[in-house]
Length: 497
Image (cartoon, rainbow, N blue to C red; front, side, top):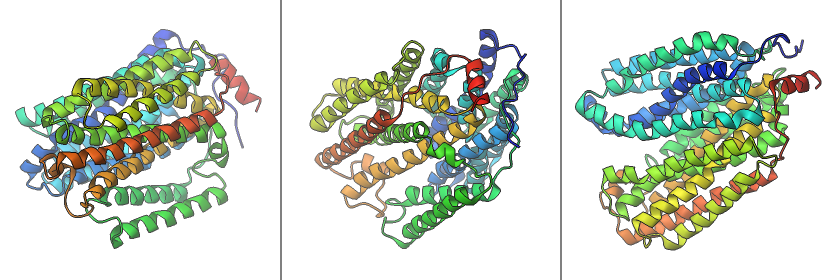
């Protein structure tokens, strides 16, 4: 039987102080996941040396990526069935246990297994935090709290690379995992009590286990193909072809399961919702393009601009910090504007202009103007993120918030993996290095001349232009629904559906 909203009608609404106390706890949980994505990268060379295995270092990142991406939509569905509190606390507990196993790992492959466990917990933390914020704050007022979310990603972007390098060199690489224990226990303690006051929207349903297994297997197979293609194996090689074919078959089986299951993992009505569909695709193209730039721009700084490895990381700051500023400004504008789509539409249009300048001036623009242009592009792109997330959450009933948010984050991560693979194919394939053992690291050492790299990055910037253009097209397609102004309005809307 389909039950309606389970929040008691007499429950007092959360005050700003209540919201702030809950926010602090879930911000710490978000910080755990966001910091882990940035702190490990700079420690990897030290980890490889001390564990005596440099060749298989990428598995430290790949195993976490496989697990965290695959389970993201599962967290959302589980939260809609069993509640946000138990789901978030479970994710934190798994993440902390995985971090403990990482810190104690005596070999690289045991570290890879521990990172997989850590990813099983970390994959749901950001999506669950966004869902809980949506439970507490109606869409019309959610922009006021965007600064809290933005501060998490801003601080993790700044602290992660620095802490990873300093800790691994001055102390021991395991410390980057040990610090997750007090942070995780603090997040667990702060959210355990605070989330008891959270409005309840879950409904009694069954988790589609077969659908979950099919989607998880399809995701992992696809991500393996994207991670290995063009680096470990040529794109046309039997292993990559087999992985892609296997992923396609599994996705087809998952689609069949969605159409035939009594309670599919992702409701068909949710996938058919035009706001959810267009908003997810727009954010997927935009975020995927942004991730691709953050991965390959250090290569541009080192091979074209002539910066050192340390300074190339600093060169990324305009890109990472600008996105936070743009998202904060756009989120706050949503509280005041009825036509809230105008901000990211203008922002993406300006980002396209900036990217066109990058294409035309690649290799000739001095470093300072180049960095300022990156900052402008980043700020303009950042305006898309809160609008896409809030629009998706605003278009679904409260009891579907977890599934919708988890699904949107899942496809953003898949889009990121696809676009990173495209960028890699442009760079490595353009110099005939696809599958030949020439990687981004050897390119940084000067294996290819500067003029060739300039030409290849013109193609990379052209792909960036295309990614932002598709994001703008689907944002324009997305229907601009009025934002609900109160939790009571949301409950009435669900009760009357």
